[in-house]
Amino acid sequence: MRGTKADAGHGSSGSSGRSSGRDEPATQPLTKLDGGFPARPPRNPCWLRRHGVSGHPSCREPSLRRLFSLIAILTLCAGLAACGGALFGGGGRQAALPDALERGDYRLGAGDEMRIVVFGQDQLSGEFVVDGSGAVSLPLVGEIPASGQTLREFERTVEDRLRGDYLVDPRVSVQVITFRPYYILGEVNRPGQYPFADALTVLNAIATAGGFTYRADTGRVMIKRAGEDVEHAVRLTPGTRVYPGDTVRIPERFF
Image 1 (cartoon, one colour):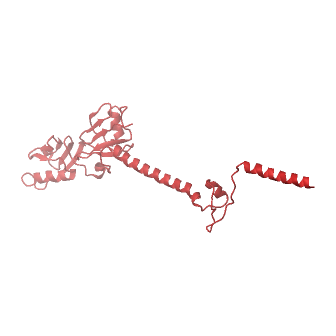
Image 2 (tube, rainbow, N blue to C red):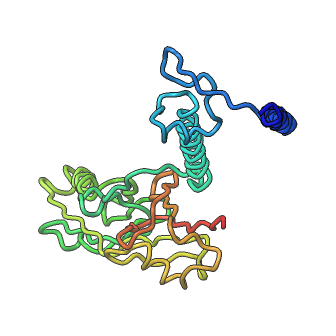
């Protein structure tokens, strides 16, 4: 019996010796704090979420990182959009372009050919052209300034010049029969001056000028209206109009 106890005691001590020789890390149980979080949480936040500990700061870190990444991406996109607007704007001002012909306030300019009718006075009526100085030479009264005036304004100007010395109550009608030409420049195959046609669009003008070059920006066009000093940057669509005296410029693409 004593031998058996000794053997048992010897085996127990041997087992204890083998256990201490492995240097296994001692596992410590997770203890709960007042907030309900483990005192020593695992490094993987997913473990916490699986065990219902979703409010721990470690669980919030991925969400915060995603939020900061999203803010950074949106800021970068806004900056690129601003740079793109400055890059592709071409220095022109984006604006709604006037539809002068449809509104009836078209202003005369050099090169316009018009029919002037003085009612009851065939010798004073006829077809006349606005010359390079912007004037029209009429019988009896000589040169009359026309450039920059609407048709109605020019009618009143002619009536005023005829009234008194020549006619008591003149009535005048003015109609444009041939509009002044337009100009197309830039990335087209045959830039130059072309006669205006009714309902002319930018795409029609480009086709008349031989089409785009391989360097052309086919998405936008720069237009300077007659009598203006500013180019308007306009998105090129099938309905983009050209008016008499316009200067159309097709810009070069950047990429």
